[in-house]
Amino acid sequence: MYSYLSFLHIVHWIDILEIGLFSSCIFFFCRWLKQDRQSNRPCLKLLSYFYLGCAGFVSAYVFDLYAVVQFYTYSWPALIMLFIIVHQKSLQKNYVAARTIKPTQQADLNTWLQIMISTAFKSIQYKKDLIFIIEGKNNLDDFVTSTTTFNAPIQKQLCNIIVESSLCKSKSQIIITQHGTLRTISSGWKKEIDHVWLDNKTKTYAPWEQEALYWCTHLDALIFYIEPTTKKCTIIAQGNRVPHLSLEKAMSIIAQYIRKSSLSLQKNTSEKGATL
Image 1 (spheres, rainbow, N blue to C red):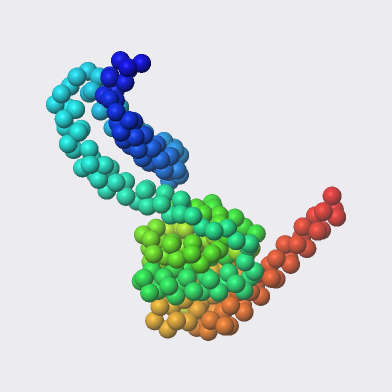
Image 2: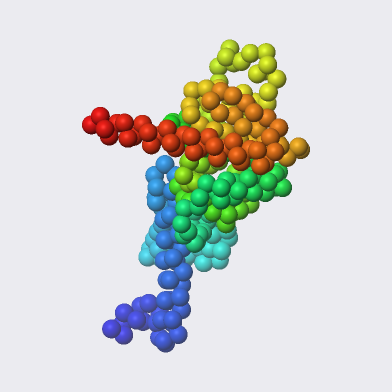
């Protein structure tokens, strides 16, 4: 037993304490890297790079490559910093996804709408004016390019984290369900609109409005956006555009649209159940 301890250079209980401390740090760091859900092969990309670096150090020690061991020993902090810099975006996504958000009951319609309006104003302060899309019966996964997925109830703390991070840019799309669930952040539509569809009046609209009008003609989503200069809200739904709305009027229209859509969905579900 003593020979094994000597091989590990353990001669005092303090050595065991130090080994336990560093082992715990490495263990929790690996668990954090394992939460990488942004790569095409989940739980492999970042963690595999870290394992590769550790394997290089162990191999150099086993084969008694003195120069390589010394390089690892003295440059390890710099290598960790280089690793963090190179994978900054992926690590930041893991950080946001791993932030502890206190679970709450699903907010009612007026509450989460107010949170969204507040988030829109906060994004303007950060010069990241956002476009909010409320899903209807049509799932938007096949139509938008998702950058980060949440599927979490809308909460003010979560929205603040998103706005303050670099995950969303100006004109990023925030996808929301009619039940107050924050689904995903999107960088835009997957398919460009057919400009033949644009008439003379529509051509004068902003690019995001042209895209919103096109897709809302084909989908049952509602899109709203707060203009940074006028602080007025523009709503686009069912191929119609309603600009320059006050916040009170905009919230009223959005709430009315969601209630009407929910009642229609419940009615269709009941009719299908009766038919079966």
